[in-house]
Length: 80
Image 1 (tube, rainbow, N blue to C red):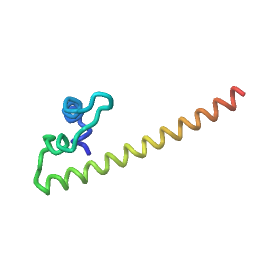
Image 2: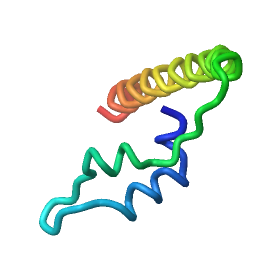
Image 3: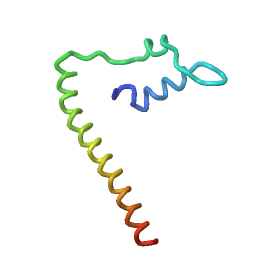
Image 4: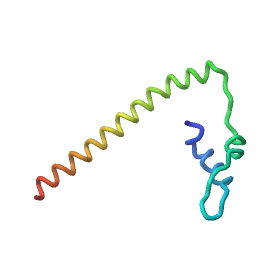
């Protein structure tokens, strides 16, 4: 997930898109993407650390959505 969301990978995907009317990525393009293969211990360590960060990002996103809803509700009560 992190590799595919990186700016370098996005650039690589955009440069290899196919189609003239509607752009798409071929399965072969996905197979040819330069994804590093690390030892299992490193991947596990990274996943353990990233899981905490992703969980916090998810909580923050949900909190922001809730606060935006509350802001809209309060502003409608004040204005109306």
